Every structure is written in C-alpha cells, then in structure tokens.
Length: 589
Image (cartoon, rainbow, N blue to C red; front, side, top):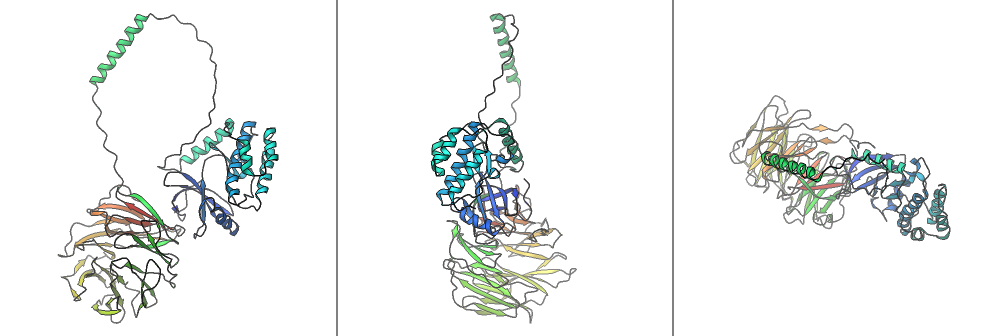
C-alpha cells in the first residue's frame, strides 16, 4: 500500500481515495472511503479487456464504466489472500472458505456473469469470512464451480461431506444452501495475518475511523499452579482497613480542586453537504440565480447542467465546443436560459441555450477583431450584457446579448485590461495596466447605462498586478486579488461608492503549477458564506477567512476551481485531476 500520487483522483464517484492497494498491467486498485466511512476497493481498468469487465460488473457492483477513467467498487476487508497463507486450513476453516466463495459466486451468477479467474490469488480471508475479488472474465458459471472444486481439493483437510456437496449441487446457490452457516474461526496464523493487514491499513485512514471488524472468538485456557495457602485475615481487620481507605478517599476528593471545564471542540468552517457527478472533468462552475442548477464547463470542451436538488443532470450534455471550449457561463434571471462564450483566434462567439433541453436559443452573437492576448471578455451575472476587449483602437465594446446590439465603447488605451460586472450589471469595473512592471495601474468603475466613469479611478500600487475581480452580492464591496506565480498574492477590499479601501489588505500563498499534472493552482479571494467572511482559493487549498484575512479552521486541499451560489450558502468545488468528474458541495456547519 502507498499514498495516492499527486495526479491520482481525489474522489471517484462518492468515494474519497485514500491509498493505492495494488497494480498490474491490467488494473490499478485504490482504497476508497464512502460517506458512511465504509471502505471499498476501487478497481481502475487499464486494458480493453479489463474495461469490458468493469462494464459487465456494473450489473452487480457500483461502477462508472463510461467515465474517462472507468472504475468499479467492491467492499473492502483487510486480510491475506489464500495464496499468502502458508499452512493448509483445518476442516472447519475449509467449510468457511467454501461458504464465502459460494456466496460471492451466487451474486455473480445471478446476474449472468462468470468469474473466470477463481484461484487462490483472488480469494481473500478476512475477519468476516472468505471474500472473492470480483471478476467477470469467464463465459460459463459451471466453470467457476469446477475451479472451486479444484481449489478446495487442494486443501488436505477437505471434509467428505463438502466433497459430496460439490458433487451433488450444480449451482453456487444450491451449494451455499447445502453448506449452511459456516462461522468456524480461522486458525491462529490466519488471524495474525488479518491483524497485520488491519494495522497496516490504519496508517492510511488519517482521521477516518477504522471500521469495526468482527474478530473470531478464540478461547485460550491457562491452568496456573495453586497458590500456597495463606493465613486468613480476621473480618474486623478487613472492615477497619476498608473504612480507612474510604474515609481517606472521600477527604482527598473534597480537597482536590475541580478541573477546569474543557472548551467545546471547534467546528470546521465548511462541512460537505453532498456531491454531483458531471459527465467529464469540470473546470469551471456557475450556479443559477436560485441555486438550483449548476453549469460545468468540462475539460473535454463540453458543458453539463446539473440539478443540485436531485443530484442528477438537468438535461443532455451540450457540445463538444470547437477547440478552446468555453470561456464564460451565465444563467438568465429565471434559470431558463444559459449563455456561453468561447474564443477562437480573434473571434468571440456567444450562444444562448435551454439548460433543460440542451437546445440553442436563436442565432449566436459572433464578434470579430477581439483582443484575446491582453484582455478577456466578461458576461454580466444576469446574462444580459457582454464586455469585449477590442484591438483597433484599444477599447471595450459593450453588447446587449438578447438582440445582438452594440451599446457603445469605453476607451482603454493601456496594454492590459480586465473587466467584471457587478451583480446587477449596472457597473463595470475595468482594470488597466500598461504592462511595465515598474508602472502603477488603476481600477475604474463605469456606469453601463451612460458609459461614463463612476467617480475617480482607484490607484493600484506598483508591482501590484490584479488577476481577479469579485463583488459582494450587494455590489457595495469590490474584492481584488493581485499577484504572479511564486510571489505572494495580495487581497484588497474597496468601497465602490467612495473608492476607498475598507480595511488593510492581506496576503495569500502564491499561485502554483503542479509539476506532475500540469494543473494551475490559482489564488483568488471572493465573497462567501456571509457578510463577515471571504472564501479564498490559496494555491489549491480552499480556506475561509475573516474580513481581516485571518484563516478560520482547516482548509480543504486539492481544489482547482470553485463556484459560490448567489445566496453564499453553498460552495461547489472541483479537483485538479482530469480523471475526477465529481463536484463537491460545501456549506457552513
């Protein structure tokens, strides 16, 4: 067993990956933990044949054979394989072995599957009995019974009654019924191996509770030599001594100061409230205005819309989109429209979709001559307006998406500009910088109705280059994150009416690049949970901060992107592993 690699999935379906159990040319086997702390073996096929087995086993096991990384899960119990047991088993243990294998074969055969690889390496002896590592490599269930007979016949102590059961019963179910209950304990050497595997497992469970394992009831009888007779004590002496001890203990108890009360255990700032599963690895997340739908822009250039309440897709997958995938997502106010934007070369395409049917609504808005190298487009949160950086002359064009109307332009002569709408779309904040590291930059707020500046610009300090803009839901606070790779990120909070900083800024860990997976671990801060807290993604760890930047509780590691519901009550996160299709949902405790 070993810890998962950096590029291993953090989750597969509802299971958190804890360790790697084994690997060979055909499969990898990971240890996973479910929401109820149940341990499972997660088998990841690596060949076409093993992928076909995963698809077949989905009839009897929890599995996702259509995932980019297919997998199937089976209950995990620590213990050695039959191949690792050095000595032959005694008669009662052979019966228990046969009963456990027959039970698992019955489940397989009832689904029309055949194991096809029944040998000692595929049989595990656990505290709960013998378990068969699931396979679906065979064609005829009768072959499994022949293999079982050969495996049991290799045990010198096979009971004659068990031989008759194997000869007289033609199905695994009949064999299991004929054997009946088999609860005899394993021999001591097997119990020792089970204890060793359980101890080895404990170091990989972190804070996970070790599952309760029903151990075999083994009774040891030890006969000690009789003690030398002692002179009996008088009853009076015994009573006086006992009374003296009681009085002394009572006096000590009265005199001893009461220990201070222990403080209550601190609550974690975030608790997981559920999960969703997209059809591919999600890279960008966007909630609808009522928080009931979540749109995901996926690594395979597709888009999913997931129903947060039912935990299922709300409609069919949309895409794949050409080459670059999606650069923006926004729901209409009623949730019946989802607007997407994507860029190819110097062309921006904006489309409206019905999230329930996956059908496009009306023709797309196509804008040529955009500046994709030194700026990025911005969608208003109500999917009504679009701000697009243009090349010649350098400016920001504002468009009304519904009727494809260009409203006007904002002159932005600087080299780099980045913009973001406030929540109601009435204000657009534009960050401008000429690209010179020693020069200062500025933030300017614009009224989107009149296209006039809303007050004086906000001066940004030298070497303080902004990479993320975010508003609080009421639009009164602008949150900026600045920084570059390998330099600490700085977070500032601004009053959008006075353009003054509300409180001193603070720093976060710099953005990083995972050298193994190539995933960029961004750093940014945004509103979340309530009006007294911020959420920050700090180099791949999600943390909850007070307004002064002090972290509250432990962070959630391994996060590549996140989205926050408009009411700030739900946080959705994704990991950096391209094999992970899970979106985890978090809330305040």
